[in-house]
Image 1 (cartoon, helix red, strand yellow):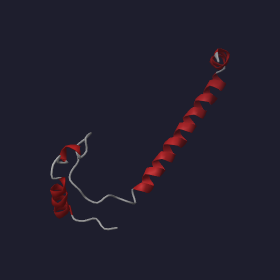
Image 2: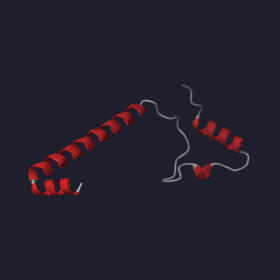
Image 3: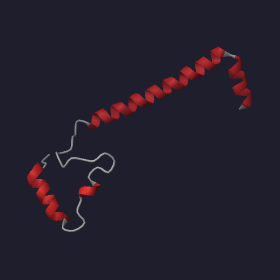
Amino acid sequence: MEELLEDLSKSPLKLGAVTFSIASVGYVLVQGLRSLTRRSEKYTLPPGPPRHFLLCNLLQFPKDHFYEKFCEWQRLYGLYSA
């Protein structure tokens, strides 16, 4: 491994080729992940209560009588039908 790194440091052309290869693979991976997320945008979620930054709706869920809160949200935001 050390010999490979020494060889790369002596040849700027090889170092540039390795750098370009790594950057190209990274770019292809990022574009692939973006295309996967774009496909899921077709299927949006129904409207709901506003979210907080990191905790989302975790603090809005009641510990007791949660069914009543869900019914209230259904009246406010409507029922999602596919």
